[in-house]
Image (cartoon, rainbow, N blue to C red; front, side, top):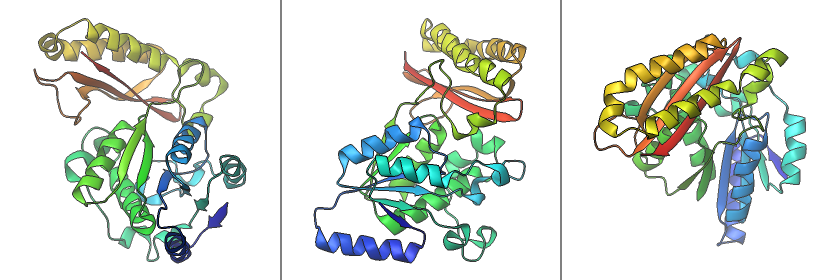
Amino acid sequence: MLIIKKPTKLVSILKKQRLCNPDLYVSLIATMGNLHQGHFELIKYGRLKSNYLIVSIFVNPMQFSTFEDFNIYPKKLKEDIKRLIEYQVDILFAPTSKAMYPNNYKNHTYINVPKYSSILEGEKRPGHFLGVTTIVSKLFNLISPQLVVFGEKDFQQLIIIRQLIMHMNYNIKIVSLPTIRAFDGLALSSRNQYLTIKERKIAPILYKILLQLSKNIQNKNIKDIILQKKMLLHEASIKLNSYGFKVDLLKIRSAKDLMKLNKHNKNIIILCSAWLGKTRLIDNIKFKL
């Protein structure tokens, strides 16, 4: 596995690889490191579907709001490298912040997907998706992958990157894989390690309450869901609060485009983010009526 830190070197090596192998089919898995089984499922898929696999690790300061955890975000590059070698990754691209933002990210040109970046999670985390789309676009420009694979846990991010690919005319296929969960239902996340032992026992209740909410909704028709939505969400919020969660976001939306429900919707998603202690948990459940 090649470990590359400089964007210019990455471009140079990929150019040589493509000259030597015209049939090179490149997949990219973009991460912020501290890899867990959710990441490895994406990597396994990329390895299966391509003949050249690139994983990026970059903790992107641009996507952290002022109140978020950039300075303490877990960084375990040595452990990540060992695991990536096991998964037969061809290139690990692990640039520094200065390499990606030579003049500081605050003075950097950015890419914005306006319709989706300021709603839901974007409203709660101003500037977050601006950072995501800017760095993902830079990775696409440097690597020119044919395939990218993302998880569905960060569902709004997935929708936004689909829009980015379409709007910017990238010739890239995007594949999404279902959320990977621990044995007790908790969605895997690099931030789960912030949870205390007591909080880790409580955390799976978030998914259980969302699951119950989805079952309640599936027993109704779309008109009733629209009429009863506020009540259903209020009841779920009360349950979550009773276990110590502080609900930040809880919405029922169209799984197609994240817009508000209308009578034609068949694909539904429940989106939730909630604080448990100092940890912000994100989860969702997608289903058809």
